[in-house]
Each structure stands twice: as structure tokens, then as C-alpha cells.
Amino acid sequence: MAAKNTGYGTIKILIEKDHIKQFDQIFDIISRTNMAKDLGMNYQTFIYRLNRPVAFTLEQLFAIANLIGVDRRVIIELVLKQLEAKKKGKA
Image (tube, helix red, strand yellow):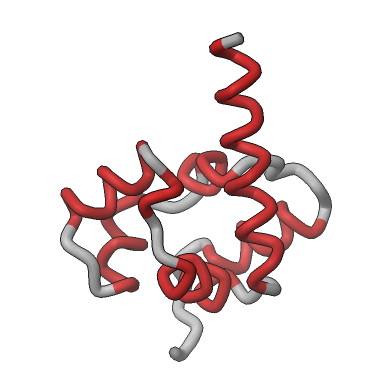
């Protein structure tokens, strides 16, 4: 995929500088609509999965990592951190 001026580069920098600590923080920078479109996903399906990150397939998470330009494990770690924070919030 050719890099467009979409904000993905900004997200990559913020992740590398440890300013983005959880998966959902990505969407403070980039629109959900644009990412859903870039992934070729229906918007409602994308929102459903954002609200339940474990519903994303590994292939979809890898595609998100590819869009941002980071290692696949980085995105998985961000999802795990979000799930852990949510779990602690309910405790």
C-alpha cells in the first residue's frame, strides 16, 4: 500500500515515542472511517470490533500494523494493554 497523508506516520511516531499506550488511543489521531475504508471493512463491523478488540482477527491486526508501519507485535501488545486496563477498571 502506498503511504498517503493519512496520519499513520504520526501514529507510528507516537507509538515509537511511547505516547500511545493502548490500541484505542490510535483513534484519537486517525478517523475510524478512514481506517475501516483502508482495511476494506464495513464501518459498522469495524466499530463493533473496536469496542471488542478480541473480535479482530490476527490478519486484521496485522493489516493495521502494516498501515501504520509498525511490527505486528506492537499492535497486539497495544490491544493487550487495552484489555488489561479495561479488566482492571471493572475489578
